[in-house]
Image 1 (tube, each protein chain N blue to C red):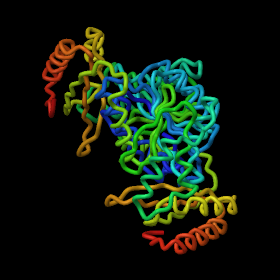
Image 2: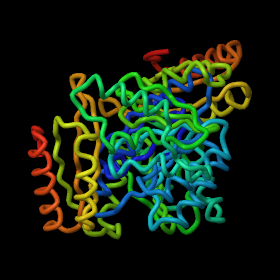
Image 3: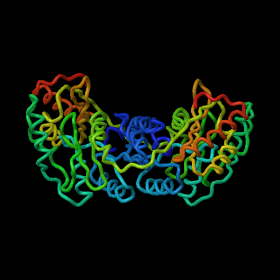
Image 4: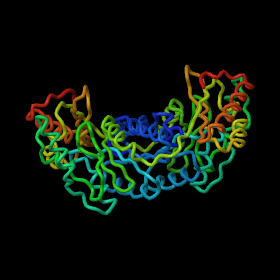
Length: 239
Length: 239
């Protein structure tokens, strides 16, 4: 996520949660996220590190027409390629602005500059495309545009098996069940059990989330956790 | 931010935005944020990299009593120290649970293990402390507890001069004003001008945010931007 506005506290980011949910739905495990400032070195360093470490990298923000939109220059630099006027991107933008009262001026033409070798990502909302270069997908920062771009690449992504999950929310607190829960985790290696405490109406409670690629393993672990909660007199608020 | 629940899309993180706002208020520039999974290597690598690069590092999440709370072990490893039973943390937890119907069992005693050399951070809500080790501040993941912990360290932080900011929201779109806005940015080097487009009621608009440590410089840039917007017939919706 590229943008000073997130780091300065001006904007509460919405893109991470969207991407996390959608990637989970597609069976793509999100392993790490970074929020990086609008500074070339910061972007180049992060993109270089992440594209090497992971199968796919999703980048949002900084591809607009203003002086603080430096993502494309940074991505080009991270890949050691120039950012060039892309004829197809130019055509799309030209056609888009021809249908408005707005001029297709130099600032807007900047949005047709795309790193060499990248493939465009459609932007059905405001025309200016995102792009994919190798394993890096670059999208707009405005959430509705980012989401539309993600929709347009969704079917092209190498997806995996979807992780199943079940959540048991209870009024018990973590500390009461922690040791037995660990034992359940140790007996159910095909599942990942997460324990997420919360405070509601001034009271601690916990949501136990079981995740697995294997539905039967998930069901078995959930059954054991359900018994654990009952044994301790816990109410299961939702499951 | 440490937690599988954020990366899996289960939980929409609230701590980053809180920290970003509070740090800005204290005149501490937030330069980068990372969301890291509950995996020891991931946490150790991130903490080692960030504590070297920045003056302060704020960590949230993973210091509870359950098996998936591995932050303390990872922080200790990142600093090459053991995590030991901390007598003061133990005393606080013991006193806290003595006042409840809950046992101070082994799982809860885990929360008294603190990396050697760390100083405790008060937790007025559920007793289990956070801690500071060198330039790394480790706090709970539950937002209300994290916020209470942050309140208790707030006055100890080395703060800077607060960045002033002003926002001009307009119905104009970025592309219309981009080149002149860049010229204004170039003439007002003591300010940082950010351009943040949005879509409201199906229409593009933009918020121009001017930030500066220098109030007079801020005022001058805002005056120029106001003229720019008027020149283009833009309505200023808020400023």
